[in-house]
Image (cartoon, rainbow, N blue to C red; front, side, top):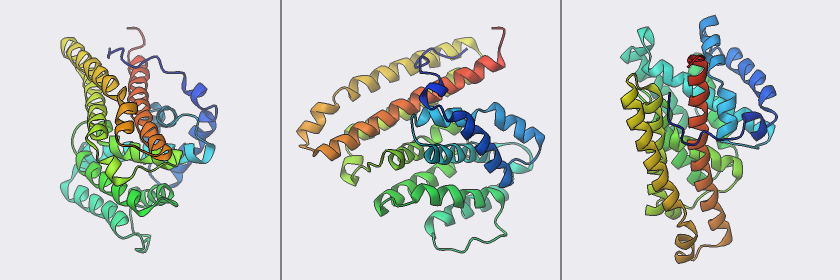
Length: 282
């Protein structure tokens, strides 16, 4: 069993009553785009409760935004499985070609959408363009760079930590507040994002550890990281006052920190549910 950190989140339905509708719609989206290759893929996808995870990451968002969140999270987790998975899906030539095509979508937004693109790439065009919407260029540049880093990291272990920064970028889409580049790069927020990523990795390790002692050690490290995060986040008011931020910039900082909290909380709760389903008698 994994650590108890952050496992007291409200139920996913309490966070967003539209989760059931969104789950049905998301399954249709994944199927129509050819992302689920067979019944085994479909069963694994349903067991992953992707829409519930998306709801935990971005609580109380409208239906259209929840649909985007579910589609993007579902696509990203499927991509991670196929980039780091076994068999032909791990063929290096296939991985390099796929990552190259995904990167081209970011770098060449006006490029033709060729019907010859494989389903993973065509689906990426869809969720990337929906994410960008009316977002400013500064956001597109930053988010694009984060996704390129994620495409590389997803080829190894730890799929969810690799998605940390892209998910925080997506949170800005939903709450409509984009951090200025100088604010985004401050040591204060950079350290908080680093602690968030460390927490995700440690919680992943705690739930996946085969040896109980290792799981306990990772869980304790996750708890320490969370305490460090909370201690630093508590200084947000003083940091913003020292920087003499406007009300809008202060709101953007607060929402960014809240997105980190929800990311850690949703991730841990999602893994707890998966762990309970895998070990119902424990």
